[in-house]
Structures are given as structure tokens and as C-alpha cells.
Length: 246
Image: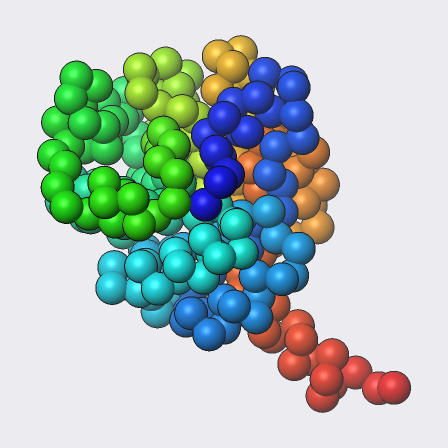
């Protein structure tokens, strides 16, 4: 892969580029399905290991498809487990999105698990990246998720942690945690814009999961946006084939 995702997004955060606002969030697609989806026009691929039907063993084959299409890959982790973080980063992803980060202390521990010394404590070995099998090696992104009321309260502190490249907002869980009416409610949109503003103040990356017209309307204000999921794409495609007249 010849795409330095981190450099592209940091340039966007500094106002020097459009960022990557058309991501496909994959929850069940295997390598064959991703080969078909890779030509859809997406800027990047998100592999979701927290929800859906994918697990750690799916990552290498999905990565190979994405690399062939020259698409950067971010993986949403199922937890903060340093061992899992190391495995996924060793596979050669462009970075990790880590759920439920609620404080600067949790973000600091996350950075330690993602970076090799002196920036962190992650070990290295005979992995795809170190053996040159994952394309060119670029610095990998560390993106904690802001998706709880507590995380929102501490978003500025999370962004201030050295080694954190930015944050990825989860409006669906955030709306539940904060008691907002829905992910698309004015309260959720306001909270999302609050985090975008904080990221802009620090020159760091900000992204989020969209999936509704109201959230998509905010896409131009961020650097990294997951437009929707593979499941939604399948459902809408089938509806076009079978449910709509004409």
C-alpha cells in the first residue's frame, strides 16, 4: 500500500486537504465480497472487530484485498487489550480505532499498547509489516473513540495525550450514554460538533460514523467519515432490486 493515511489526515486536520470522508464500514464482508466493494469509490475501509461477524483471523485476508485496491484500512478493536492491538498492528493496518476511551489515563495506556519504544511498550516480531509483506510501512494511526457521556466530558484531555492522533466519535453509543433522543438528534449533532471544535484547536484528526442524512450533513467538517456499513449497502441494494417498482 502506498497511501500514508496518517499524513493525509493530519494535513486535512491542518486545513491543507479534503481528508477521507467516504469510508466503508465492514461488519461481515469476507475477502471475496470486499473485492467487489473495493471498486465502490470508498476512500478507506473500516474493519469492525467489535460488532458484526468479523474477527482477528479475518484481518489479513481483508487487508490483502484492500492493499491490492490501494485502500487504507482502519480496524475498530473489540477492546483495549494490548495483545490484540499488537496483533492487528503487526498485520499492517493503517491504524486502529479503539472503543470506549473515557479518560486521558485510558488514552495513555492505549498509546503505550500501540507504539513501540520509546513512545510505547509494544513489542515487534516477524510480522507482515516488519517482513515487508504489508507494503510500505507508514506510522499507524491511534484513534480513541469518544462515544460516552464521560468520554465527551474528557474529550479535550484525550486529545491532549501525546501519541493520540485524533479521535473517532461514535454518535450511536454516545446518544444512548448521554440520554439524547437519537444519533441524529440536535443534541448529538451538537456534541459531535463540540468534539470537532476541540480537535481543530489541537490540530488533531477527527472522524465519526455517519449512517443518517443528519450525520452525513456534518461530514465536510471532519477529516474521516464512515459513510455507512456493508449491511446497509446490502439491504438498500436488495431493496432496489426487489422492492421498488420499475
